Image: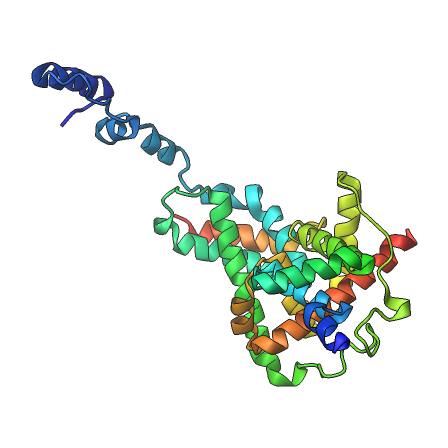
Length: 232
Length: 86
């Protein structure tokens, strides 16, 4: 119809004159762009073309530093980064520049991390399920009130970056000292932001077990972070 | 009877902390939310627990390592990318 923005505006005024309609609304900009050849959207798309030669330099370290605390093992983290790049190269045609290259690679990595936990859960089967019946009894008394030595104390990390980094380090340390299954749940839930239904599926645990497990994890993690936070 | 009514409208700390985990995912009914609110507005320990746990949840997403990848792995991956890209 129209080849450029100016052309379509001219057409718009011509139509207005022709029909004598004064209330004709201006054509929205995004519609004009569909017809125009110098569409800013496609121009941008061409600019974010995937560029594998620079991938490692740009994202290698970022991806690795993201993966490492989530899988706890440097060799596994390296393998995941490698697999991410290889999958990305395979799917290069699927990359249309809708998202940035960086977030695209991160999406692939996140899927690899979930796959890692799925595989791990299969290997360990049901044996690793801890006994959940008596698990909260050391935190609460018979009436369900806080046990005296477990009551939460006052501590607060402020919003400044050094304190947040410090807190993140402590959280990571505490997470690494949880039991294996609890580590998996904590990582998927709080570091990877998955929903309960998905975590149950990945780790192959029942929903009721999940909530009891999560409750215990939250109690343990808060207690552990408190101890180390107050120590410093 | 009084005990029964109290039990019906009040959570104890164990129940309250469990419900907080479900609240995080928006899995509480209106009544449960009210019961939890009632508990935390009276129990300073559970209030602290909720605040601190929320902070842990918030910061967990930002955790990343500081160390870099080993040189051998780095070279291996760069070589692989080179071989597989065209």
